Image (cartoon, rainbow, N blue to C red; front, side):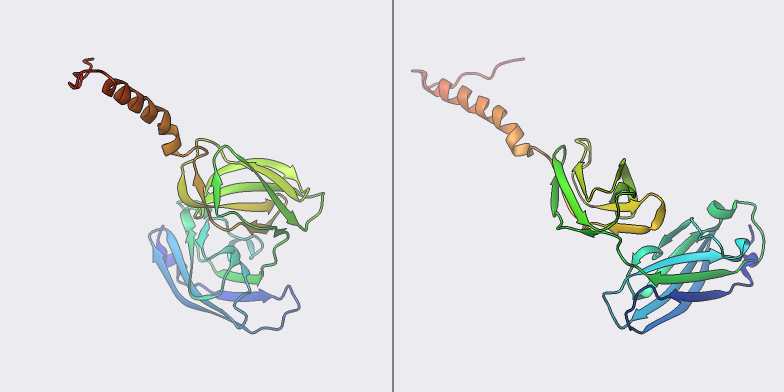
Length: 241
């Protein structure tokens, strides 16, 4: 694939105002570069209201800008905060195939991100193999929701789908690696823009290692004190295997 096929690239930005807020936004493409088969797009998104978040999508002229491109990463998707050094990475071969050769244009579209549900509280730490009740407000009973466990942007595991009853009993598997900052992604199965994320949290063992080691430590203490109770001051020789 020859990167000259991108000799004609048009970058536009369409902001769809999804709420009644009166704020000022500005958008600009700062740099475009090819890195192997990947296209890196750097942009600046400024907003006078720093609490605003956005849904950012990348489209191409291959289908007349009708469907968002899927092989993208970086500052693209939902809940994107404004900033000066935002980056979208588009994998051309993964999206169009290794033999793709054509002139193509791209368009970036943005809209305000409005969470479709509001989570009640958050956890800083969760223990493996222990049930936790997640609750929220919003949404409808007709919605089918999914929950994913993420580490960074990488999906670790899926939980079974369920109807929106504004609560879910979450139990992390005992095999999950402890530590790491994890977070949950809760989304509407039928609408990829209806997504919320929990705060990041750490995963702990259900029973700490020091507690698990106590029985062994106790046995060692019993052996030592029983030996000391002997009338002899001579310590016994170690037991040979």
